[in-house]
Length: 264
DNA sequence: TTCCAGGCGTATC
DNA sequence: GATACGCATGGA
Image (cartoon, protein in one colour):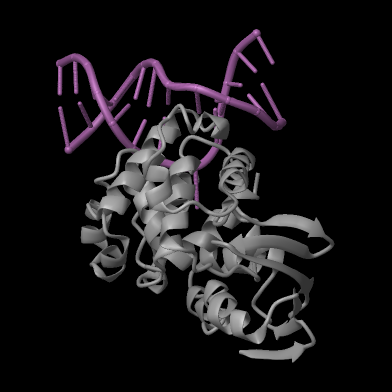
C-alpha cells in the first residue's frame, strides 16, 4: 500500500480501485457522487470525501491516523485485488466480468450498519434504499445503535417511509441489543452457524444474512443469491461456480453482479 | 396507469 | 420441503 500525507489530505496510490465501481455498485448505500470522480460518504460516523482516477486518489480533510485506523480497513487496502483477478482469469465469464470492472473492491463495512442496510434492501431498489438510510442518519444525527433503534416502534419510524421493513429493523435492533444475536460472535463462527444466528432475526433470510456476512463481516465464502445472481448462475454456471472462485465466492460475486447488471 | 424493486413471512399442500 | 402470495413505498 502506497500513500503520502499532504497537509490535511492523504494521497493514495492504488491501481485496483475505481471509485464509481466500488462505491456505486450496490454494496454500500452511503456514498454520493459529489463531483467529477468524487464521492462523499461515511464509514459508520466517520465522513470522507475521496476523489481521483487512474490509480491516484485524494482523501480530503482527514488525518493519517484516521486513514490508517478506518479507511485502510474499509477499502481493504492491504489486499491485492490484482491477485483475485489473476486467479479468476482461468474462467471465461469471470475474466470478462473482471475485465469489465477492473476497479471493484470488497468494502469492509460495519456489521451492524450492513445488517440494517440490507434489511432495508429487500424487495427494494437502490435509490430508495439510499433514501431510507439517509433519512435514518439525518434523523438521529449519526448512524443509530441497536440500543437506540430497539426502543422504536413501526409508528415512530414512519418518517423513514421504509414500509414493512421497519418492524424487521426493530426486531434486529432488539435482538442485537439484548445479545440474543451476537454480531461479534457471528464474525468468528463458521458461515453456516453464523447464517443460522443472523436468521433468528425477522426479515433476515439467506440473502440478507449472506450480505451481512460478506459486506459486514468480510466472510469471503458468503455468496448472496439475489435475482441477478440466480439468473447468472443459471446462464453461466449451471453446475456451480468454477474451481478458481472457491474460497472467495463473495469477491467473485461482486464482479459477476456488476457485470451482468450492466449488460442489459 | 401499471409494473417492479439486491426477499421474506406466512399459509397451504 | 416446495410453492404461491402479500407486503409499503416510490420511481420508471
